[in-house]
Image 1 (cartoon, rainbow, N blue to C red):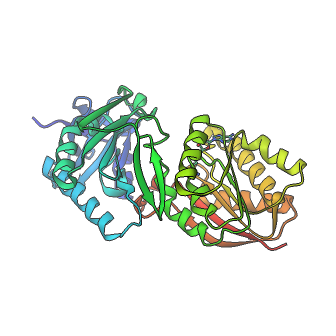
Image 2: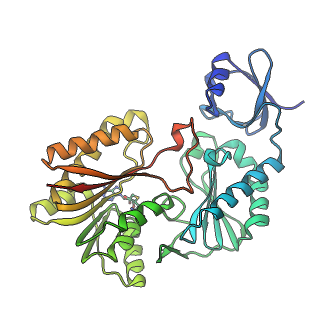
Image 3: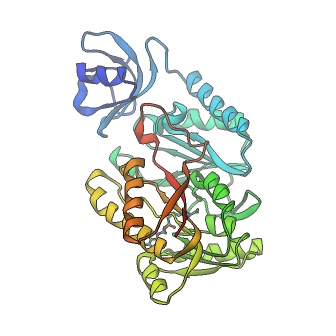
Length: 386
Ligand code: SAH
């Protein structure tokens, strides 16, 4: 018998509203094992589609198909192929980009990033983890990578009862891989770098921000120099700050490699912004690209305070006519909230500020309509008028 999950009337309504997740509380009857691909039935037995089942996570079901369409290996392969073709159609000016963005590519909890000839894969649910062999063979056939690495160390796997591990799944994967983005070369540590090595979701925002960069640049939360190098080429002087020594070490290597001069400092941005203010320093271009301050709902209030603080300090350090590129990757702080925080910061800084561009994660990280969780990155480009 095929593994089957029967859901509640509330669960069925949720599916009808277009959201592809069913929570544990809406599972009425489970006849399936951890990680099975299951048939989903409504409360009166009507088949609603097929899904990945998790017996540990709060998200019990992640829909793959609706109605009668089967969710076999061929479907997974077709979706991987469609994702790849879409990326090709984007004509991305980089050798590193996201090939598969989970729900946004109808492949829930699967992430695949491409770094030149190498692929980095994350399977973040029991069901997708079990499909890893299918995913790997499809990727080999469609992309012909030199090596595939599983960066299966995110914390999210613990909620699924899955191990945190990093494995070479195919071919060879060197310690450092070199990629280009908009004409800048980056050395990437795929095994130990943050995320899968680079913050690929900011690629198009780095390119857009470069169009405004001028004078003295301050890149806060610089990591290995994504913004510092893309913008620094247009600036007279560049200071970059990150709390991670590893990130700053690699930033210095990347800067030397690209012939961009960067004063790269290990430090806490919250302290350093105040320090720069005390010294009376001023900047023409400032980037704020912090980590997600709100990783869950409970952390929102504290996150709002954090975002407000750095935006306020940055607006004070900014010259009139200067550009502030300010980002938030906390899904729990939505676009409207973030706009309000930035406005509050401007009021407190007594700065008159115009919004020049409202941006989001790059096109290789598509948002699925009806799934607000897939829209997480906000990037505003602001101009200080006075
Ligand atoms: N702008 C980068 C990505 C930034 S990710 C790029 O384009 O590549 C966020 C970075 O913030 C991480 O590198 C992390 O080490 C750093 N970070 C986190 N908290 C910090 C703090 N309080 N002060 C300075 N850096 C911090």
